[in-house]
Length: 415
Image (cartoon, rainbow, N blue to C red; front, side, top):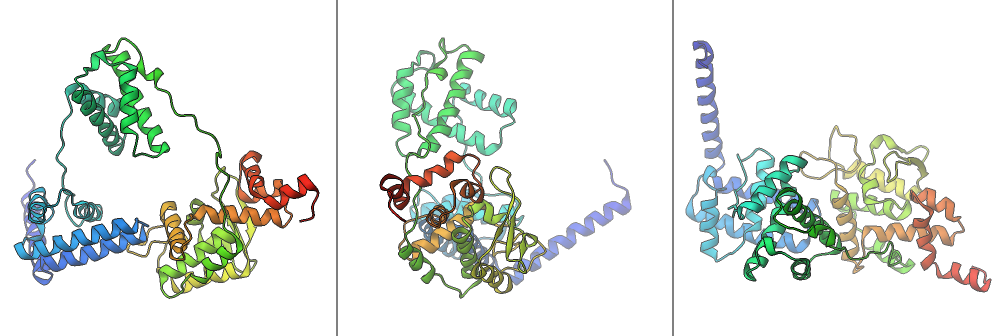
């Protein structure tokens, strides 16, 4: 389509103006300085998102080397985040991986500061595997990330079969069992369940849709038996709680935010999911009440809030919470200050515990809250409501570790 002369002239003028603006920006901020600022922002974002400290240090070291490399080679900004640049960097430093650089490129791409993240080299699988991935994506409307996970499982299966000279058409359940035993070794049970389901889908496709397998091997794959609450809930003892609160700092916005979240987890027994869903409008400072509108099981309720917890929340709002029009209570500290995610809140609380050598998680505070309720004489049904449990069986698990109550029931001792 040909644009009218006037519009065409405006488009040319706009492109020229944008080019001049971009050039001026890079003159004012050299690529290496721009990259240094981006790295600082990315590392702060990783910390705020609750990434593992080891991963943070690994990314920090890799990106320090990458910044030195870019300065030495004098790359232009548009040439920094390319596959060729990454390969040259890895070759220079003898690195097989550069997760920090790829992570930074994804971070900048999501914020529209570069056009696209560094692309990955896609090693195509044999046709039957690729055809299944296409079929699954189209029939299930599966997201790209899920397809990538399936592709990783199928690639491992293909390599396993190829190394043993096994053809797909001659596949037997014994081969699958042997593959799973080897493939699943480093993974947690939840991950194994997900990957097992992905493998079943592929085997079902080979049998039902392609008639490559004469038997439906998917039906023969058995999951490991799992037990609900095989281990009783773990909790902190009074001395450990004192140690935790004594170790909390109040110096920075991050400290104030963590302090408020620890209070909510311990004194109200809230899950990380419930903590990050709290809105400013849910808190009544005058009545010292908190209304939980979004809870597991969709059973909203209003809880009384201890005075020190109210003060912890107020301190965070006044001195730690970023200025924002958002009504969510807990926000990320980096711009654009989005609401925190449950995983980030859980990691933030866990980090507070780690600093005082308590190898525990945010849920230990919730379990401790339940134990305190039991010891104070609250009935099991009241605890069920306050904990937001759907079933009484979930609440009964706390009886398994309440030793004093067990002794009262068994030996009629006074608590």
